[in-house]
Length: 112
Length: 114
Image (cartoon, rainbow over the protein chains, first blue to last red):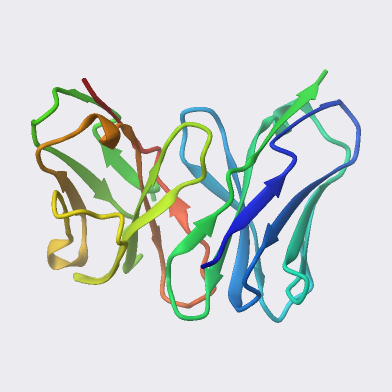
């Protein structure tokens, strides 16, 4: 059974810092991995999608990497801003299913 | 394009009552998903539709839960005989065809069962 874990559960940093969020999964037979952002009381916004054959994806200040064989992904946020404060969730899709399996998220606070 | 729309935003009900939620996906998306999220946790998959066909259903979905997507457009999720453990945020998402398409989520329906 696939399990997705995110570390740390919460993170507080001063504005301007570069930071890394971690995601690990137990079954490497994934089809893709997505990173989402969720603001309090709201739905999820897809940030980056990495196919299983890819190593990384970039969008603006965000860079996500994938090491499928070791069951790990990282989300790198450069020059963090207070507006980046939110919960960040990673989710994997397995080869044989359309469902996403989510981690519990990392709650990020960027202090001005 | 107004994104994925869910109604109502909040629902308070008494234990034992039936509730129904509606989801309107992005118009050109033929895939629709329902997820449930409790505080501090990531969303849990409930069910998946491609057009009007329900192709995948979680074991979490007990007999009290049913979902429909008539004509492959909007979808409804009904919970019968609600229990306090059903209290959660119910999220709908849609995507277009293609196995690596991003999901677009609605803002969710927050259910509170008293």
